[in-house]
Length: 231
Image 1 (cartoon, rainbow, N blue to C red):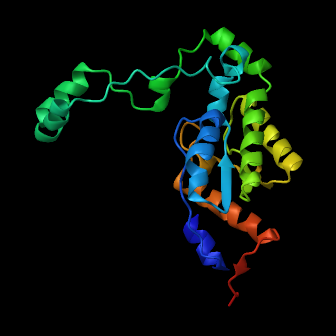
Image 2 (spheres, helix red, strand yellow):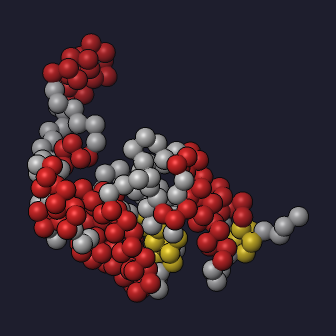
């Protein structure tokens, strides 16, 4: 994205910071915006949310307002000084540790509560409104605007997926319209080649298409960006 912006506009000079974290919902990203990202003093923040909140929506009361029906306290003990030394010094010890300890590979494995039975899960998803997703998205937009930061809301692209994600994308559109935020509608441009097997995470083609759509949308808006002359 940074390369695409700087290739399209003469000024300003763009610096893009990838501040997203795999597995985080709008709840974690609201906290992230408040306590980490504001200190970077960005001019603009691009908010791309959706699918991770559908996991919270599978729980009772859509995960609860603080997502405590979805998240749990992470039970993680850092390795001791001796273990860290052995990790560095011995390949055999690393193999032993991995084979004898539970080593989570993603945040969901250590921070999410067990899912309910499939029947309950689907019932919760079907009746979920996205009320906490909407509240968190609205809070992120208001927080950014209160600090003079331009929020850009982007709908999540996807392949065939449960209607709950489509519902959240519609809420993203509603929040953007209500708060006067920039909307970049990536969902409607989605193509099969944009996604890996899970139909959510992006291929290189999908990432390129997302960057191109952002640049195109910024070019249409009345922003203080000076386009490079066309040859």
